[in-house]
Length: 234
Image (cartoon, rainbow, N blue to C red):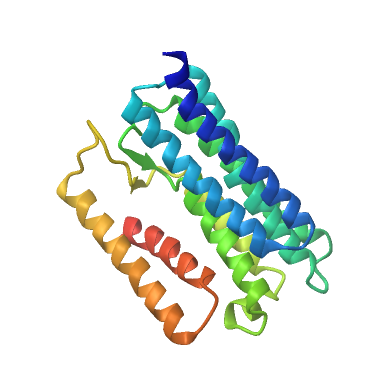
């Protein structure tokens, strides 16, 4: 029994480890590798919940460990990636610290999720992994495609702080957003299924567009999660 409950927690710990490694690569000016660590953390974050449901191995310590891991991988890491990306801009000065507010609102979002009994099969507000993917993919794409339009947009000192503020607002808002959760008791209604299909269609379109344009694959991730927000808002 103890071993069965340790499996999801071990997977969650890998999420945390990937987040810490992402922070290290961020401070070594490798946002591309940091984003790969964020993606790996997201995979482990998905798998730990899947394992907990499959093994019926829920625990209080697992719930707390999951939140602590998420705040590093999907709160601190994306905020630092925005900070470091902005720090390289001329004239940024102290304004490069403004995106760090995203870490605070990510922590508020996770704390709210832990005590909100309405979010078992879906979310109220933007989930932290989605927010992190937008930040991480944007920073990675700007690093890999410095002459691209997104890179030129981010060269102004107000774009990244504005992005952090918009995402922070979405994190703590009460807008219902669907979750990609599957398993017993997780049956989706017609609206949720339609939203999932629309999200997957946007993600596929983004991947095709990125391939056609010959741009870095992080653009496909950025398009997919911006599409996630748009689908939910519509």
